[in-house]
Length: 277
Ligand code: GLU
Image 1 (cartoon, rainbow, N blue to C red):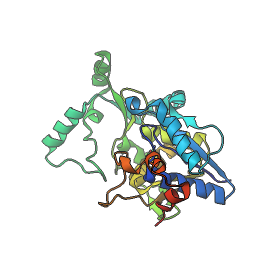
Image 2: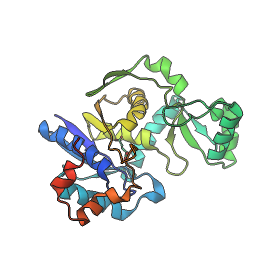
Image 3: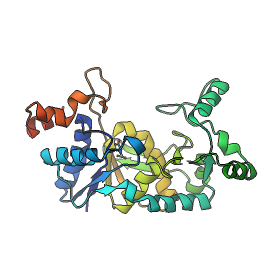
Image 4: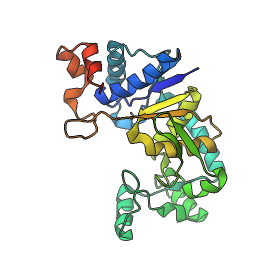
């Protein structure tokens, strides 16, 4: 049984980049007589708006990319993420991080050359060095904190890992790629990497399809799956839709939102033809 999902964040209307992601997941499931699920990744705080859940569903229906069953909302799943975090915390695989964005930037500046990740510099590890007493003192003094994965501790536990991508083949996991990522944000108590892994398992996703811009995240996800005892899905990282300057399409490319294309008189077939190349 093939189960795929489309997992947009309801922080804006869908654009062509999303349509490609939705179509890849939809087609993979439909070709295998499988199940195509919709998950609203709505843990992005104030950027999430009620009208966008509906807008996403309307756009998908208009494009005939209909999902099966009820869409899942991550904000309804906070208890499951807390349990996953607790299981990592019980094994000392996460640590509280009290740094502000500003402090992290200052630390990078002090280091001279910030440790580079695939997209941005990785966390410099400041709070990883705190003693348990220092951690307790900071927590008691009321400083807000996030939880970060202690990636250096995981290698001995898991040994070398790989994941399988239908397009790219077998890829060895490099846990150091994204460094000590945040697994629970200060505001909401969870974060993308943890929530996505917990939900892919919960929804029994067999094939995780997503844009190749998220390839480095998959390294962390595979690691988390092993640490949390979750099943390993097959991956498909697809190409991205680019704008006229060769840049990845983003929500700010408003003219290419599906709603706008639809209002301009295009048919679903015409819109879908824009993502073929
Ligand atoms: N929610 C993510 C996004 O909108 C995608 C999640 C995933 O495929 O892992 O980019």
